[in-house]
Every structure is written in structure tokens, then in C-alpha cells.
Length: 449
Image 1: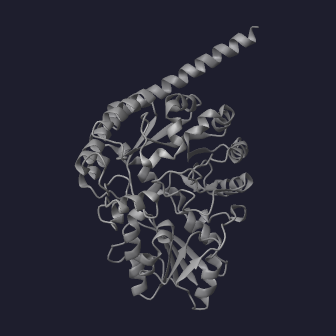
Image 2: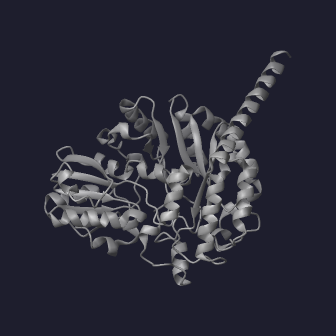
Image 3: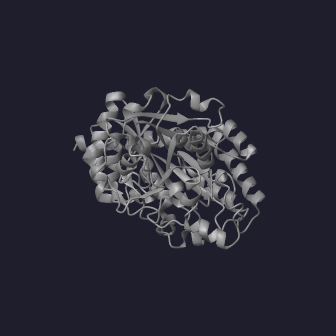
């Protein structure tokens, strides 16, 4: 069979004013643009699990509505596998419908499909619910026998120690500024709004460090000095695995980015290893840094207990030359129109190198979505295109939607202005120079003893 693995690329913001801000203040949607431009690691992994007698192609589709799109693709395909995130799932459905109209069989998968299987089934010959790796061989065998089932679901969590090296060779490397490698899957923490929670994954799992290094070596065959993004929800949630990972990375001469939680600041040994291993930046969910917040979104979350240490933790991490991208969630139930000014004050005091401002987003399947639905606060239950992290899809508890929108815009204009962006960069550089100076003085003092 000739199989097409199709990923939807691009970033989507529905609100025209917010979209314009993103153009004028690139930092506003910078992280989302990075995510949208990353290759689909899931599809590349399925391609690696595809037997050699099949012909495979990996394609990123920027515009599913292009009139001659199907004709432009290097088909015809016997089977296409399509994956997308929630904000662009309707685009994925339209793309699937176009292929099916021409007689091509379509398999849909991914997190959104797993959470909304009945909806997704309307647009596919088969859907994959949950992890794709365990069932992909069965999908291919059934497709070859012309006996595709409507649904495939794994019966046990996938063992990451058996994961193949993704088919990075299918990519046009020149179009990427970073490539992805997964070292862990899921997250053990209990954040109401997060679609990465263990509630949506069978359990939190890690990939052996030697497997990660094997993937890096394959990437280096294509790109001598790659920048790597670890496609994890929380790389260092398992501290023992985290130490093994960075131990293996030391000496590999790669720069990398990942997402984790603020608790890494409490492990000085790990921070030193991360610095030596080439960690450039970590994204940390700070959500709401203000003391006293006890909203339902965070009440059972251990992060609420970390707030008193946020400023010191950020300083510790950045003193190791690792920049922190602090992610804030606006629109929590405790937020009022006055909250934006307090968050702005914290951002200035924290001296964060990067800042990501997002709107509380009710992704399907999350406890947040179910609670807001129960409370009648969702704005159009099926408006998946508004799950962008910037568009408002719910009624806030203590302000109007317009106040939330205006608060986001005003805060973004201050945080991402050219002047304040320059200030953030200079502060970080100055702290590193001071650290290097202190280190040199200490070394000199020890030498002269």
C-alpha cells in the first residue's frame, strides 16, 4: 500500500484583534507558533512501525481548503493517517472528507479523536482511540485485507522501551528550527485544565535514556548540530529518570528545550547537570503566582504550595544559564479585572526571560470542561476552533468575557513590547555576567590558599 501520514501545521487565533497583536508583538504567540511548526512525532513513529513493503510519505498540510490540494500531494494513496490538535480538528475533518470523497481510506487518531470518538468516526473509515503504537500493525493488516474496523483501541499502555526510532528521514530538515524527541509520556500532577494529565493517559511512563540517545544519533545523521525539543508533558516528574537522562546527554553537544515543573529548582545537582547537558530553556507552568489563590482549578494541585518559592526558584534555575519560560493562565475563577496588574507586577519582579500568557481553555475530556459544562459556562460546547489558548470559550466567574479579553490584550502589550522584551534579555545577561564574575573570584581565592 501507499500510505500518507498527514499532519496539519500552522497556528490559529480566531479573534482578529488578538491575531493582529500576534503580528505586531511576535512574542505573544511565539510558543504556539513553535508548537505548530514542529513535526508530528506520533505520525513519524507510526511510519517507523510500518513494514518496509509499504510505501510511506510524511506531509504537512498548511491549507486544507486549497482547491487542488489532493492533486498536489504525491499520491494517490491507498490509506492516509491524519492527526491534529483540538483547535484544528475541524480542518482535519474537512481534509479527511476530501480524501474519502475520492475513495481513499482515512484513519484518524490523536488526543482529540480519543476524547471525541463518536464525532471523529463521522469523518473516517477507522479511528484509533488512545495510543496508536500498539494497534497500528492491526490497522495495516486489516487495511491490506480490506477489512478495516471502525475503531481500534489499545488494551494495555505502550511500553516506551520498545519504541522505534521515528522516521526523521522522511522530513525536509531544512524547514525546521528544532526537532522533537519524546522521553516521557503523560504527567502525574492533578491540574484541572490540563489535557496532558494522567487521567487522559494510561499512566506516566518514561523512555530509557539509551533509547533517547539512539534517536538523537539518528537526528545527527541528518542535522549535525540540531536543537531538540523534548516532546514531554513533564520531563522531570520522575527525578531518577531525569538524572539518568541528563547524565546521558552530557557530551552529546546538543541544545534543548523541555517542559517541566518548578520543583526542579530544588535539585541543585540536577540543575548543574542540565546546564552541562545543554539545556537552553524550560517552560514551567506558573498558572497564577499570587498567594492566596484557592480556586478549584488549583486547590488540589501541589503547585499551590510552591507559590511562596516561585521567585527564588526562577532565580536558581536562571542562575545556571537555563532560561525560564513562565506560563500564566488568565481567567481562573479567582481572577478579577484587578488580577492582571498583580500578575504584571510579579512578571517584572521575577525577571523571567520568557513569558507565555494564555487564556484558561476548556479542552474536551478535561475536568475543567466537564465542570464548566455542568455550570452552564461554556460558550458553544463544540467550538473546538476556539481552543487556541488565546480565544475565550467560557464565561469567567468574576469578570465579563470582554474584561478578560481586554485584560489579556493590555497585559500582552506590556509584556511583549520591544522595550520590556529588551529589559528581560538584558537582566538575564547581566545576572549571568555577575555569576561568572563571582565564580572567577571564588576560583581565584581557592587557588591562592
